[in-house]
Amino acid sequence: MEVRIGQRVSRGMLPLLALHTFSEYYRSESKPPVTAALIAANTIIYLRPSLFDSLIPPIQQVWFNPHLILKHKDLKRFLLSPFYHIGEPHLVYNMLSLLWKGFQLETSMGSVNFASMVASLLLLSQGVTLVLSKSLLLLFDYDKPYYNEYAVGFSGVLFAMKVVLNSQSSDYSYVHGVIVPSRYAAWAELLLVQLLVPGVSFIGHLGGILAGLLYVKLRNTYSGSNPITLLVRGVTDFLKWPFKFLPRRGRITGRGTVGRGTVGTNRGWRCQTCTYDNDSGLRSVCEMCGTNRGVDGLSSFQRSSRLDGLPLDELRRRRLDRFASR
Image 1 (tube, rainbow, N blue to C red):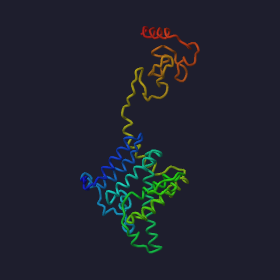
Image 2 (image 1 turned 90 degrees about the vertical axis):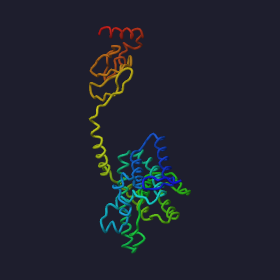
Image 3 (image 1 turned 30 degrees about the horizontal axis):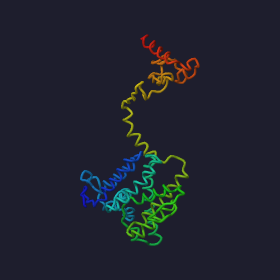
Image 4 (image 1 turned 120 degrees about the horizontal axis):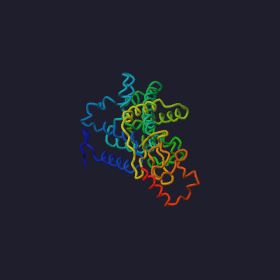
């Protein structure tokens, strides 16, 4: 069955990708936003809807080609080529892999650190691939196979993410039916994919693995803050800044108001005698039962044996006396 979506005709794989992604996010307690944004960005670029058609360059302008990138200093090819895919199976396979890896990494690292890691891996994988292609040309005169190769796709970043994900693992993984140690799963997948799908970019996948190893090495040796993490955190803080001026509403319970957000002596406290939530820290006695407040916001019921085993009738009488005196 063929379905036209945007400027593309889907043969059923894209709806399955959407359904699988929705079900994963629906049933999971953690809903990583950066992973969802990456999947959405790759899919939108592939579909090229008319609303974004003028903003999305055609694939002919973004193919990753080392010769053209170095000759024209073409940053557009260098930065955008990972987000383009040449077909529906190419896109769906990469996005399913991104969904699985992104869920694990973003949940464990946090969205800001994960976003900075993806940006770092993208730059490293593209840079390593560029250096490898140029080196093969200079050392072995490999011109057409690698230096003039055209490639697109997110798989280089995915190979790097696989290295980071399995860098500290001592388990075993299945790679296309073959059991290998998880730390070497990326290398096994590199060889098996090249054998099963000869047309894929070997140098791009190898660059992704080397970029992942380089990232892990730098992360383990560099103790300072990641500059990209600081940049991403600064952007998110800037976007959150206007929301700080919105009024906050407290949660209302049957006994008082909780979560006013005030700090200091005006913070509310709970009476340990009748469990009433007093909304003002300036009040020295409980508004409900009249019990004196103790030190550090605790009522004297906790600290004085005078009130231990307070009869229910006495507590009721205190409440009545308290409200009768108003």
